Length: 334
Image 1 (spheres, rainbow, N blue to C red):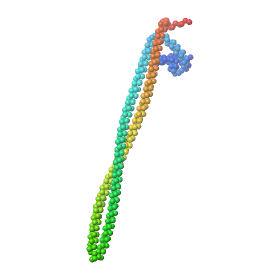
Image 2: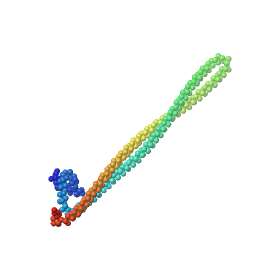
Image 3: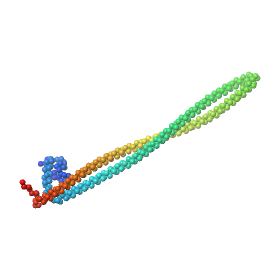
């Protein structure tokens, strides 16, 4: 008796299901169809009985033709569905790859634009820094000139003080000479007149020098005023250039962030493209395995057709040999 509930009806159903799928109903195939239950000896015995029972019913040629037609239809439908599935998978992969390539091209173009903008902004920043450096140098030169002018003014003031002291000293000498001349008026009238003229000449010369120094001082003060104005203008321009430089640095930082974002997006797209390539290779492997399975099923169908032809020939031969009234083969005599 069959173990685990395996009986002849169950084995017959499994055998018919395997034949309908175009699979050879071997002992192992039937046992797998039954869920790996039942002993191989029991399944073998039932299969022999079923083959023996199916031989008389297979004497009619009309049974092989529907089975062959069914198998041909199943084979044609399987082949058509396989080709259609493979074509759909290839088309889907082609569209995805084309979309990824387009996105990659757009990102690469954007990255080149950002690199160009980055280079331009860096050049502008370099130019602004050079301009600021030149303005700083000019401001230092102006400050040095201002210091020199201030020193000149200080020197002029010192010289004026010295002139004033000299004038006071001359006035004292003049007063002393006048007093002396009072004492010696009668005796040295001519000498006093000469001294007086000399003193007046020196006073006139000193007054001329004082006026010249005062004019020089006014000119230097005007130059100092103009220099202060130029210095204020340069300071204002330097502040404006510093503001422009700060703005350019902010724009450069923003462009650099956009450049890094574009580079990250491009890396993500390349990673996605690699994943799609791996999926494509996996699908191609599945297609190859499907083709191998399809070739194996085709070979099984061809073997089954050959077996059907052999069985049909044997049935025809058996029909010719057997008596028509009972359809049973004559027993061999010992």
